[in-house]
Length: 591
Image 1 (cartoon, rainbow, N blue to C red):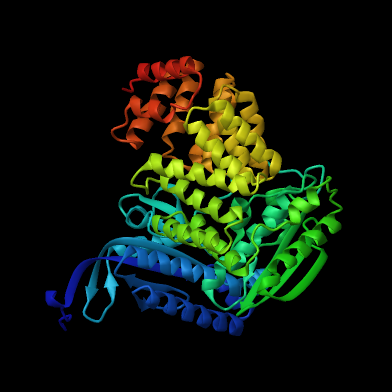
Image 2 (cartoon, rainbow, N blue to C red):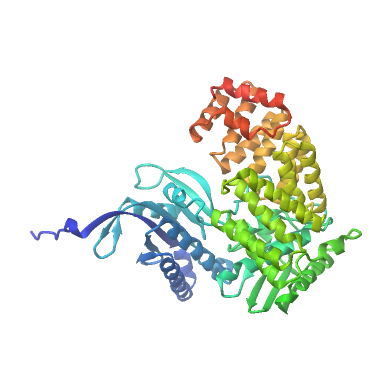
C-alpha cells in the first residue's frame, strides 16, 4: 500500500491572525437569472476585495467560486477593509435592478490559525470567520468578540451585540456583533408601525458621492446634513433625523419601503459630484406611497454657489409639499451662517470627524472647526463645532480634564449664541451643561428654547426629555421622548432608558418594563436599564425577577457599586426618590 506523504512540522506555523471570510448572497439565483452578467459582476467585486485587502495590510488566501478568504496582520486592518469593501460594492449594487444586486456577507474573527509554507491557512479561526459570515446581513459585516475588543474606539464603526450564537462544528457558542459604520444605529426592533402624520413629512437620504474619490464622502454627507437642518426649521414639516436616514447609507433601498419604515409621505434623494471648484448636484423628491417623482433637478455650479443651490432645493420642496411658512421663517431658514466656500468645506470635514466618534476623529474634527473659525470668525458654526468636540471628549473620557472640557464647551456655545441667538444646537449644549451643574430650571429653559427653534431635531428633543425626567417632570419627559422617537425611528437605546425611567417614576410599571426590555434587546449590557427594570419588578412584588436583573447588572459590570450609580444619578433633583431607589437596590443584594 502506498504511504501518504507527510507534512514536516517545520512547514507548519501556528499564529494569531485576523481572518476575513465572505460570500455572495443568493449566488445560485443570480447565476440562474443571467450567468454572464453575474460572472462579470463577481469579477468586478473580486477586484474591489483584492484592492481593499491589500490597502489594509492583508493578503488574499483564496477566491474560489463566490467566496473570499483573506488574512490580516491586525484586527483593525481586517475591519477597515470589510467596511471599505461594503461601501464600495453598495454603490455598484445600487445601480442594478433590485433583484439583480450582488451583495456579499462578511465575517471577521481574530484567532489562532495554522499556516502552511505555501500560505494557505486552516484551523478554528478560519471556521469561526466562515460561521460569522453566515450570521451577517446581505451587504453587512459580523465580527467576533475578539475583533470587537481589539478595534473598539479605533475604527469609525459601532458594534451591535447579537448575543452568543451556536454555530455548526464549533464547540462553544460564538458571541457575534453586527458592524455599522460611523456609529449608525439599527432600526428599532419590534417597534410600533409608524403611521403618516397629519401634515407633510420627509426623509432626506444620504446623497451619493459620485466624485470617484472616497475622500470626498464628507462633502456629500455635509450637503445632506445641511438640507436636513434647513428643512427641520420649517414648522409645517416633519423631518426625520439624520441618525435614522443615514442608516440607509450605502444600502440598496426602495423608496416605498423607506416611507413605510420611517413613516413619511416623501423622500428626497440625490447625488453630489465635485471636481475642483465645480459641483454637480442632482436631487429628486419622491412620493413614498407611489414611488412617483414629484420634482427632479440637476445643478452645475461653482463651489462658491453651493449655498444658493441648497436654498433652491429647499424652496422647491416647500412649493411641492405646499408647506406653509410662518412669518420670518423663510429668512431664518434660508440665511447662511458661513460665507466662504473654504469655511464650508472645513465645516463638513468637522462634521465627518464628529460623527465617527473616535478619539482620533474627534481631534481631526476640532482642527477642522478651528479652521472654520479662522476663515469665518463672525459665524457661530466654528465655535459651535469646537464646542461639540470638547463635549465629546468629556462624554467619552478622551480629555485629560473632563470638567475643563465641559467648561470650554459651554463657553464656546455662549460665544456661538452671541453671534446668533437662534443657534438651536448651542442652546441644547448649554442645557446639557446646566443639567450637569444641577441647574435644572436653566437646563429646561435652554432645552425648550432649542426645541422651539428647531422642533425637528430628535436628539435635542430627547435631551429635553432627559432634563424633564431628572427634574421631577416625568409626564413631560414621556411626551417629549415620544416626539423624539417619531423624529428618529432608529432611535438609540438611551432614548428608551430615559423613557423607561419616566414611566417608572409615574408608577406605570408595565409600560416601563416593555420599554426597558426593548432597550435590552438592542444593548443587553445596558446596566442602568436592568436596574430600573429591577425597580419595576420590585414595585409589583416580583422579587425573584428583580433579583435576577440585579444579578445580571453585577455580572455585566464587574466591580459595580451603588455609589457609582449614585454618582451617575447625581443630577436627579428629587433626592428622596433617589434615596428610595438606591435603598431598594440594596435590598436586592447590591452594595
